[in-house]
Image 1 (cartoon, rainbow, N blue to C red):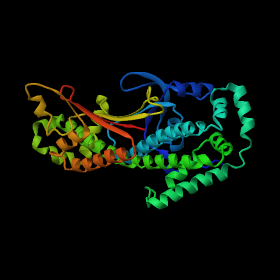
Image 2 (image 1 turned 180 degrees about the vertical axis):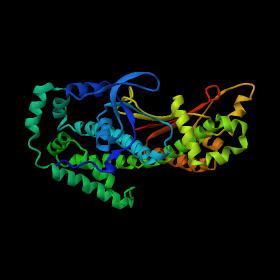
Image 3 (image 1 turned 60 degrees about the vertical axis):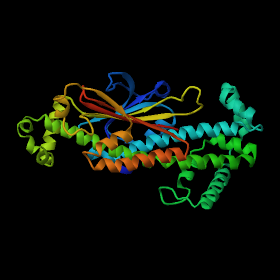
Length: 379
């Protein structure tokens, strides 16, 4: 009997998963059925539309370089915060695994004793890979090599006194070591003990970068909450009763039945909040660098007191800023934005500490009455 996945093994968020060219090619070769999908920007692509997604499946799609984007549209996101946190963490970790393997391969294949073997594996075609397999042998020492790399990492972690988010030294290192391809380990076996220390250094570097996922998840939830508050406020101000009784706005927003009715009306109108995660291909001229962009698009202007401040104004503008400026601006009308500022600062600091690039942008479009907030992390 096949064991059904536990809830912790899945991301319970209805979303579209768009494949890139490599992903589509992989699915066609392996006869994996895909669907023709239409994105929020009306662009067409192939991929999957799932009500929930296995964590393992999403991780493999990202680390294998098969996805171009993930897109979810909902009237609200407050009930799926846990899934949002999990989605952001899995995607960023998948990108890190992809970059880790590329860097590890580059480091190992640069060893003079196995450079020719690496060339056979990558560029030798079927006959070259067959010849390389003979030289690589059975891989009887693979467990010993994993243990040796793990011992190097454990020694470094113990010396530094660092503890990862799981509360145990080396948990991230163990995950990365387990992800090392068998071919790479066999090449290490041929090269002898010299590269083990260098591989451990790469493992430690990426173990530090994995911690960024937690900071990213925290600020994402804060931004979603701010966007949702603005969205609900915008819906409420357009309600017929509230338009004639504006003094009732805050009381009604605190009433669950009123919020539910607003969501029903939004669904009828075809209005919804958008969360999109875009995955760039390796950047030209930048080796194996990959970038992840997370963006939210919602009706309503985050940080504004009332939509009537804009409607009654003489001119409508398009304001641009970064997330720090938006959170500072929003803090005037929402005390929760102050916590977002702390999370934003922590994320920027964490990225800088481990050599990852981080940037953000916000567009407050008074003409469209919407906010688009984006974060970019390059690994």
